[in-house]
Amino acid sequence: MSAQVPVNDHIRSPRLILAAIAMMLLLASLDQTIVSTALPTIVAELGGIDHLSWVITAYLLTSTVVAPLYGKLGDLYGRKLMMQISVVLFLAGSALAGQATSMLFLIAARGLQGVGGGGLFVLALTVIADVVPPRERGKIQGIFGGVFSLSSIGGPLIGGYLTEHLSWRWIFYVNLPLGIFALVVFALAFKPRGIRTGHRIDYLGAVLLTTALSAVVLFTSLGGRSFAWDSGFILGLIALAAVTLPAFVLVERRAAEPILPLALFSHSTFVLFSAIGAIVGAAMFGAATFLPLYLQVAKGISPTASGLQMLPMMLGIMAGSIGSGQIMGRTGHYRRLPQIGMAVLVLGMASLTLLAPDTSRWALVGMMALVGLGMGPTMSVGTTAIQNAVPRQMLGVATSGFTLFRQVGGSVGIAVFGAMFASGLAARLAGLLPPGADPGTFGAAQVAALPEAARAVVASAFTEAMHPIFAIGAALAAVALVLSFLIVEKPLENTLGRPGQGGAH
Image (cartoon, rainbow, N blue to C red; front, side, top):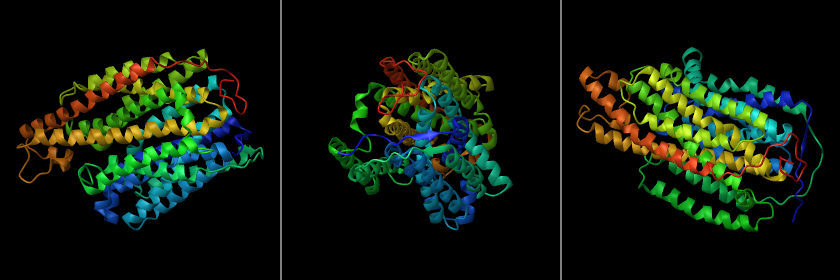
């Protein structure tokens, strides 16, 4: 069995490192959402409308499946090396995406972007544990949580602006100068200690985990959209996931250095916050997807204006995330924060079930702010609490595992919510649409073209079809609230842990 001593990196300039990490985290998270508003323009130039969803799915898929691999490899070989690799891959994918001459070319480049972007997420959050003591870590995680929320709302706005005023290719080119700057910073500010040990890579576990995650992300992303749920392709993916997930668990039990150690699941802090993170991921993706649709269809405003009107939710997430980080830094405690956050999220999601086409602007602002404030604390508290609870040699895999569950929760949640919305909308619009109209493609432009009386009826149907989604979101938040009361707090300290120990020692 190989040595368990991790490769630690020496940090020369923590502030510069944190600035570079924030920049790369912003770029990696932006690339999950920035493409959406540019897709019509991309299709008009490159064609390939049949492959439209893959432009987004390719990035989501690869960034999800590589996260645990980067976490483990960072623990084994040092986070500086793995961060440099992930930045180079992300920038290479960005450059190729900007040069795309066909839809298949673009999809392949987006997949490469995701291979780099997934590493940036995990390694950025893990490097903080190498630089900042646990008690101060929450402040930084809070700021990074705000960066992530900024990207979820700002991505479509930035993508629309660049597409309209420059070219859709600039949504990828903009990554290059900032990414190169961050790469230079890491090269100068990180100095490896030169500690190297022999390792036994868990290749079989890596293959099984990648296969299982790929199947889960693909059938949740494409099921009910690109392929029917009962199609052979989707059923095959479900069967593949059902076989490879148990096989992965069996392999990890015997692996010398597992990719995702089962010992992680003996830490209640990791299990509870991962479950809460998955629920919050589903709620956030659901709100970020359907609230703009409500604003555009029911309220009749433009996509850009709808993005601006999502600001209360974004600001709520930032306030909750940064505020929670400040509280952790001052007190060294965090147990009450997710409890308060989940209680607020229950109220926020429940309030959205009252949406109607004539809901006032200020009422909507209050609803979105509640949802954001409820989500915010998990952004800063979860990662900090997990890193504080696990042994230092497991920082990377613990951080990547938490990120993985949150991302998969969002993917599965949006797939389920999308299927619910489509079926509910079809039922409500039956007999209301012009002959031959497809409810699945009947959006804001078509609604705006209807006579006033018909437009009001259709807008009401769109709004009512969202109510079950927000009700389930409230129920899930209530489950997360119950889980938050099971958290056993491990107080945060002001010193960095020694190798082999948890962050609180």
